[in-house]
Length: 196
Image (cartoon, rainbow, N blue to C red):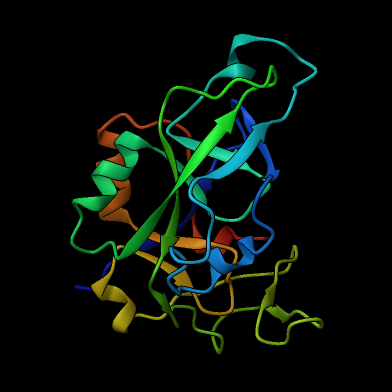
């Protein structure tokens, strides 16, 4: 039986991070290559000031939304992923600085998946390729992704899908573990509902 996958990201709830202060090559998080020798340690990102100052907007979740590329996670989310045999990734330390200029005490990391695979069936999907990067899918209201029924990607629970480099796909088994553990702010989308 083949694995099922969903597109995942951090929800846009709670604190939101600006671009990395000390790393302009964040596109490297979309390549599937090691960056531990290139990326600063730690990466630094500041929290954007939210004009609506309510507790929900100031919450720091296990999955943190931000402008810079890469999935930003708490230490406890990192510990879960590190113990998963199907997750082949690096974890770059991330220092988060609040709107008053103070570092958050909690530890955070940016996930750099080391598995990039052909998981999207381009023949069965309805896609438009990006005119600026002909190897990348341009998400539009007409996009309808269909995943391949099988492939090497099934050996892994977290992958970068080829042609959709800025996104991550996760197995439904791992998503369930994350949800059952009570981790907060993971956004899960069906590939067929992806619009960019």
